Image (cartoon, rainbow over all chains, first blue to last red; front, side):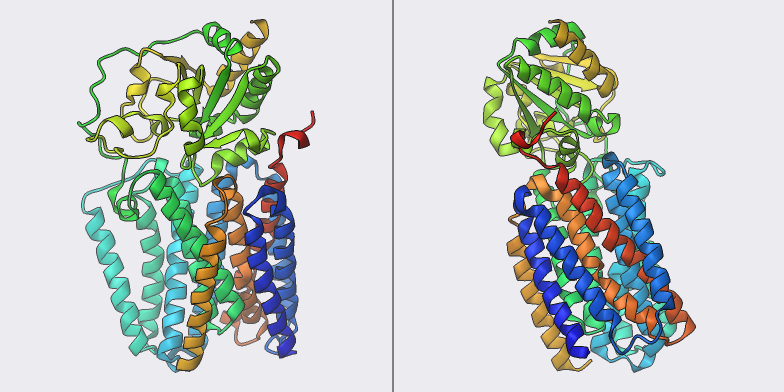
Length: 456
Length: 99
């Protein structure tokens, strides 16, 4: 039977890799994921027949409760709540890893060798940080806690000391694994550190936080594999750890910032004096004017941002887009990698609204097209279209790759109010002569635009 | 754990890291949200460890910890795969969309 278990783990590992490979194209992705799910099922069956398992009552109860919650969440969770759901699932994954680690320590304690203690240490440390960090991220996304960065004096000193203290305890434990008091202190400190790590990060940096938590949750699982000498855990955990790591790097690149900067900079809290002086006026435009411009345009590009997600305006955007296409207008969607609150957030929302993925364009593909675009419609995006990133070397977002909508013949910005965006930066785009502001909730603005285009 | 076992685990880790990098860096930005939810579902393989902890009948504390871990991990397994599929179903080409 031991061989049967190991065999299912091997097959599961291979299927996981195939599954992730299939995600390189939307056409193959679903089949790949089915394979991966089948691998998971195999591994579970393989585990259930292992000789260590003596009783099944707790297992069955746990599986039934967990599966019911998981299924309910995936059926009823609206697509707009995807960042929240993902944050929660990072917390659950890490919780499982931490609990297994704590149980291992509880059972073996002083008998643990240095290697195994190291593995368990990483397991509960990554696990603990991820559990509270992800819950914090969830609370911010669900607006239970203020979503913008929360900073205070001495924040970096506190975080660094917490980290150093945890690391020192960890190192001591490796040599003195029997000190239970130290172990549980380390667990507690990891939980605490997760809270303080995510507290000062927020708003536009959320995609980076999500990726980091994804990475840590995976590393916690991989460490579990080390602790219980199980290769499939190491492989699956490492795949998750690396995917999160790669996404973190991509997200940071998309904002031209280093991970350190995100973790310790608390971008967005600082009000800066270096923003471009904006002495112009914001020109308000009427729905009818915009509708006429769009109706007789050759090409219209929609630029969705977090504002589209909060207004749940993705369906109205698609309707308007289709209406324009029916009139012979070329309609494209420009997607900035960090638009929204998690990597690929906008893609999922537009896919939900039935926008074909062939109409979605990435930064590098769409930027050369703006000079020949008649109307660019910015829907609740701010920093990702801020020309200061390109033009003003003193701007805090200098060098960040942006969607160059300001090069379009005409720009219309859909915005709830005159306030600054999440980053608190002034956006010179709003003051350009070819930019018009259309204030209001994105959903109702778009609905009236659709109506007006029908009249045009 | 013997040093040999630790080293061979490190081998597995390094190879998985290399392979993961190769495979995942090819996932287009279009699919980054499904990627995140898929890798999260896959990493819920820690359910394997949770099952042993819950069913090993070691002591009450371990069983309760294991039981809670089984719940948490199976939420991720079932929820993760189901929602990834729900998302992937939505990604369609132009000709596949009918109204």
